Length: 380
Image 1 (cartoon, rainbow, N blue to C red):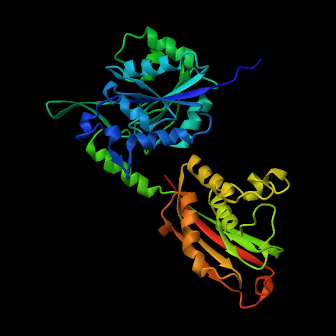
Image 2: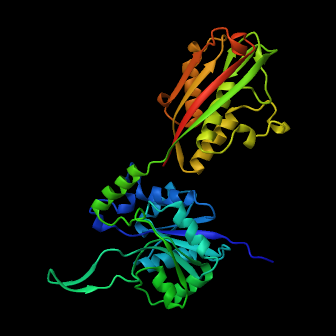
Image 3: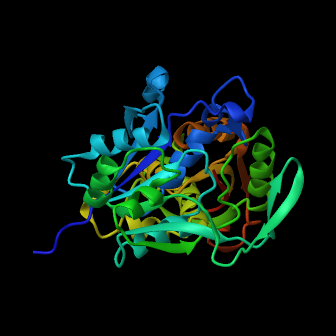
């Protein structure tokens, strides 16, 4: 029987980060408004194929584990390799077959690098990203150049470094300590380690100026996406309509498989569209009886949760309701607040507008209501 692959990542965050020069260890300093540790964790939370995250903390900072209920937090040791061994020990007996080991100080690691390291493990004992050295290399003493060094075959190592779990655990247990990284430990045990292409963006933040470099890279690579949603529901028997979660008295009701909240459906589809995740029908098929009469808030919460899982934050929503009646203006504020609560964003980021079609078309004949929404999401 083929063995199921279970992959964990160990994020080493037990250092004091004194070279960064701040009052806090660098992993708790803000990078673009969020801590470095938060950004690093999110890179692996959204990476396909990662089943477990272990966060190795300084023993004096274990209280920070409360902020990360979805990860396994363990206390690190007095050196990097001791901290990695603590993370590996925590995974023993957890059916982990592969493990990635990553420095918390590399918060801009890309999904491409993570995927390439995992793919390389299918053929090698280990794999790690690296960037070929392109600068001239000097030897020096007392502030003067004393010689040169060939850069042929030299690489700058990065993380995550990936290995078969049992092999790297045995390698660490056999190593005397003091290794520069886990590749050194692996090679000392005779493991073969493949090189996958690294990226300049995957820099290790060490000094205060590195924060500025990283933020500049983040600004250059902002991932902003727009999505549109359009929906229509016809009128039928009833004494009210539900628009954006708000019940409005009306001489007729809107007809649909769910609660026919045309406004909330358009907003939901706009979010799905921005994420390239289809529409409501893909996630909640209209021929499935369990969604008969369903509260559309369930659909919107799903879209919002999916955005978060993919690493996106909802930036703003603009909704236009197209109808002759009922009048939307008196209820727009309540609709705005309802949507804001469901999406967990500030009401000031939601626009609710209404227009008529000048008595033209099906909305002009008051046969139904249409809604058009645009949503903006940004990669966190």
